[in-house]
Length: 204
Image (cartoon, rainbow, N blue to C red):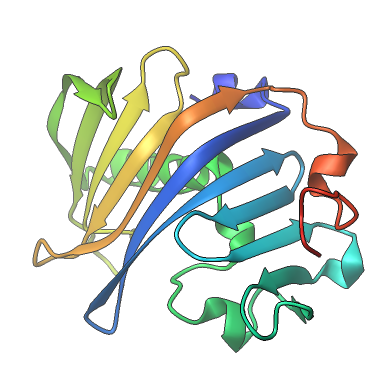
């Protein structure tokens, strides 16, 4: 997966995220465009909202456009500000395959080193209508070590060799977060205009 991700320059997808925050579950679907090293455009499917973040541009702030009465205004936030973090477990800078692979690389390597991981299942199955391999792992930390999650279920697209689905559960088996990427297009040739507030298809 890391080798395949290294070959990517950009991608687009429909992104679904489900996150539990203070015992309430939030479920959203977005259209995303991503380009390395860190350029992100997001458009929500069910609500009139879009966001743009380009590392090193716009004073490293997220540009947000919302519809409604204040649709004429462009909001600017730091990624960790309370407004963009509202009802979100992660800042916008954590989105994408690279973030998932970073979690897996750190936790799988540490767990293997200390014999603190049980592979519950690893087999082939369909995911979002595409052939995939599913890996379910349970972590049992000792000596103060901490893992990102207690139980992880990851679906790896067999053609793309990328983690197109990941679900994380706490020690009681309660879902904490789920991220799904579908309709993925790898290296579609996104340009600077795809990550510009001046794109006429956007509303910044």
